[in-house]
View 1 (cartoon, rainbow, N blue to C red):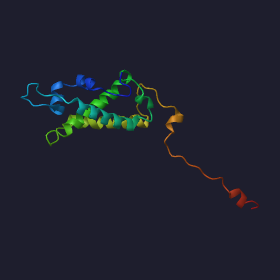
View 2 (cartoon, rainbow, N blue to C red):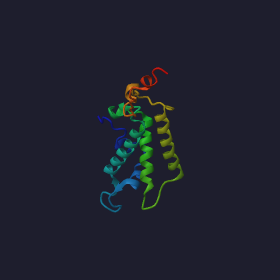
View 3 (tube, rainbow, N blue to C red):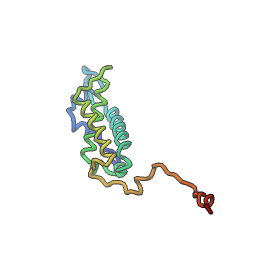
Length: 155
């Protein structure tokens, strides 16, 4: 059981055409005996990158994301991880952008969705942080006791 993992490599492969993933993140020669295979390490590093981005946006609102087993991660979060990865893989194919307008739109939609979650406009089916936890990490301030009453005494 993968705790705190939003999407596994196997789930990513199941969500997309394997030949597409081989073209974007494949290793091995086309003419070798084993042919090209999916570079699972590269996909895993992209999953970590996407997970880090998502955590940066919504981790303070949904701190349980880092403690949930993979099976309990919201499907929308898994889809967002997948879209980010596919965008990034297409971004640099053979030293030129392979990003189509569709993938650019999907990337922008994921970022906008994450911002909406962060702002509280969209909710996930996950437990939210308690109000006490949400204030952690914010700005703290302290004003010294005012001396104005002593100064103006008698006026």
